[in-house]
Image 1 (cartoon, rainbow, N blue to C red):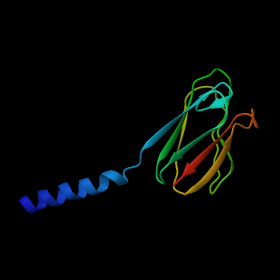
Image 2 (image 1 turned 180 degrees about the vertical axis):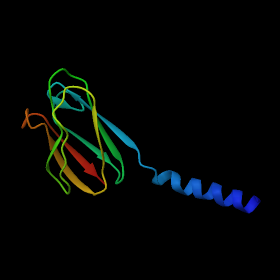
Image 3 (image 1 turned 90 degrees about the horizontal axis):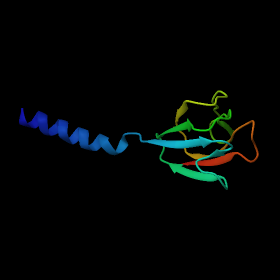
Image 4 (image 1 turned 45 degrees about the vertical axis):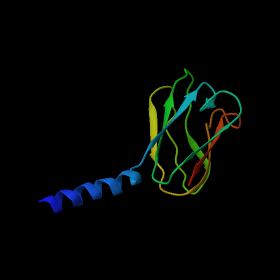
Length: 108
């Protein structure tokens, strides 16, 4: 019984670093992350990125260039999440407000 318990504890400790983390990204009126110049965020492979709408205008999340392409619906509230399984650099825009509304997402 003690051996089984020890094996379970070791398995849980070993799995903890592999657990995917969630990175929240704010979408305001005409910007990602923060107002001003385009932002770059970096996450580990397997992380979930969650874009959260905070403004009143409609926006979307569109990968313009990257190892995988994805996009959200056009919306003015709520959130959109994506688990990133491919390393690389993703150039992301809002298709309505590009080229000014853009960000870079690096997956390492």
